[in-house]
Image (cartoon, rainbow, N blue to C red; front, side, top):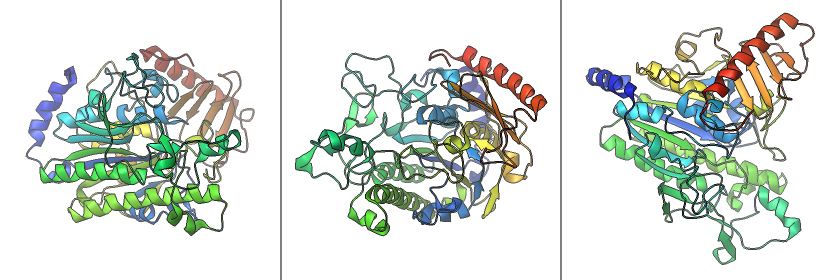
Length: 475
């Protein structure tokens, strides 16, 4: 990897940090579910879906009641997690559009230079892995335009797919179906496919560019991912090396598939609900397995762990946005307000929660602040802010607004108010999220001065994002 100017500064600081206590250089895990709605977890009030491990883990740290994904779809949110920047700045306005440029400074690069082992596991969705095979959405023979893999961005190793896979037997799909079945098969199939009746799904796991993985890719996809993540974590512990592990699950993104044992707990529901809820239960089991691994290796107290979803629940699924308006692809709360918590047992008080507005773009500035690492890339504007004071000092008000862009849509969110447009800025709505989180009372006419100030701020920020980008589509 070509060294960037800021790396030399980090190397000097890391040398000074080498003699500090281990707790000052915690292990870091970023976990993210795919299309999991705000109302799909027990810790946010769901009494039907079984998420005992997520609930227990959330109870060991701080739950964010007002946490947002940077986008209402997956690829842009993932870019924000690694860079602390709005995805429009790097030409990733929506899913399967653009890729993570090598010029971006990522958390993995910063932490690797600080002495961390770095690994990515699960859904990447920030670029293609092959120009020799047809794979997923953008792997095509002869097409190198979107090749961008985790090791290009600071990860030592990875076990990743470009995009979605079935949640059980991720490499396979039914070998034939009629027209009437096609729509239902996009949702999932009622049981794992027998090998004799299966076809290749079309998306591979990769461990390097042009190096697909064919072993241990059967059964629960969340388990397939966690096998690799745990192996990486235990090797890092064995080497006495702090680790940065990004674990991005596919579940419960469609197609959802689970065997009968995961469906029977929800037998009172229809088959689609059984599949969806069972997929989340299987995901929850693997998250519990991760936590037990940290405990058994006596590093649970020294591990800083984040969990969230990449956007709201998919349309036409049993996924729940709770009481919030909208779903995936919406900039209303249901499309971007997601379940989230942070755990650091040695530092963060258990059983706490906060209404402080935060989003995935805050990950990078928060982590480098907690580790006292600089961000010395003057050409890159950070859109996120450190959550240090919100986590440890109960900071009451967020000073830096949260900006959201999605093709044809935009939103500007302060601590109290939300300005939103769904028609490229022709018309706007204004909501008081503290007193009206369901976005039922549009205040655009009652508070014209508030709205006008927010419009100006939004437009200035939007222009800075579009001016900053190197590639991508127009808003």
